[in-house]
Length: 81
Image (cartoon, rainbow, N blue to C red):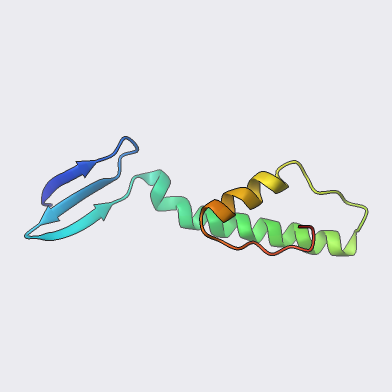
């Protein structure tokens, strides 16, 4: 497995095995790309729904979801922004 070079509070670890560093992600960080993709899918679905139903308002999760995706380096697209 190698020598643990650094371990973070979250559980992520950087190890080194014969001068080859590697990262072992904690469950939260390992699942982050999948969570971003799922959130983008939900926002796209809601965006499409509001195109056909203009009376629907943005739900309270909209702005925090957009902010989270931007923080993750994603560029959400929406007609509601």
